[in-house]
View 1: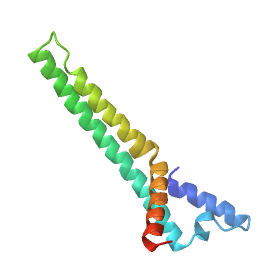
View 2 (view 1 turned 180 degrees about the horizontal axis):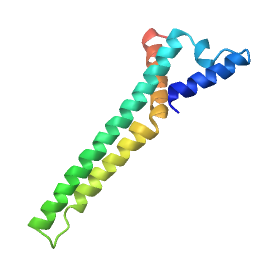
View 3 (view 1 turned 90 degrees about the vertical axis):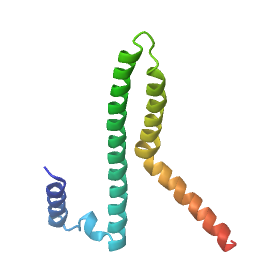
View 4 (view 1 turned 120 degrees about the vertical axis):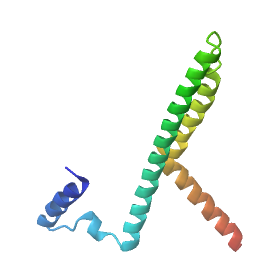
Length: 119
């Protein structure tokens, strides 16, 4: 069942019960804000996916270079560890806790606006 079908079925159920669907009650500004938040989350997930692909390709090449150039020394673990840590940070702060980060950012913006306005 697609998201649209699910939304339509849910809306029909709400309308049959005499209640408006949740989406119908929202103002155009609310709908736009919901769309932008969903788009931001989708872009963050896609960016993380691209980062994962780049990580896998580059690390695969580095492993091959390591095996060909110096098979007795596993220097490849150092870039693997460093970039893996960066990838973990990207997931944590770019995907997993994106909402928390945005809320913190909005709170700081509000503080700065208050300070700028002299309140």
